[in-house]
Image (cartoon, rainbow, N blue to C red; front, side, top):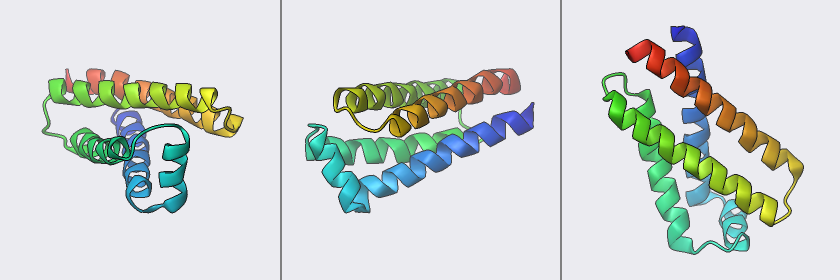
Length: 117
């Protein structure tokens, strides 16, 4: 049970760290976010919140309630990203990736509740 929790949590956290990095430093990602119609301050806000969520999910001593807020925020981000990419008519690969990540996030949350309660 712990292996499933930590594996899924590590995958989500790695995605959040990489995504946050690209939001700050990747010119193509920065331009892509602008093309989706989001203002630049929103990109920075999302990058910071992703970093915070990744750290919270990886800290074993973080409270379950704090982790639940992180899961909710990441879930909301993934759903919002999915809607934005569908509306923008982006590659189906991006949409499938977002759905897979949402599934991994759900698995991490389910096993977090089994592991910490």
